[in-house]
Length: 220
Image (tube, rainbow, N blue to C red):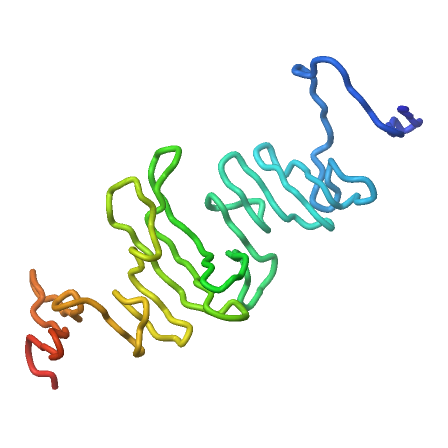
């Protein structure tokens, strides 16, 4: 049933069913605000959505903006996102938690973020930052992946890990199992620390077989 009072407020009681073609129908409501959204839910007057402006829709809970969607961007905690997806704290926060990637949690499970840049419907993921769980409480190693191959394959943790920060705080470049504070893997000059001069590497330190090899000036 529909009830209209003297103040022109309409109240629906019971189910409302609309039959027929609604292709040309329009339902208009006031713009509303975060504290008083124009479309709400039963018993939750401060939760719903509203028009921030002529190009932004805001979604609010407990009277506070949670999500805003513009024509080409999404804002979390802000209705003026300055990027495709922006998360912003509403007040000064030490160690703000803006984005979280979380896996199911079994040992050897990974979670993280993948990167892709290619103008096709199914772009290949060519880079990633992943956390690999090794034991309880989610502790594990952080892996930085990069696939430099121009092909149809996505990045692989087994084949494309370029740098690893272990659970113990050791950094590995070219190795996923660093044994010292900074462990550079690779054979010959591939495992070198190089100092580049004009046009070429003029100084390098690398391990060749079981011997540390240094080329350049004085170590002092």
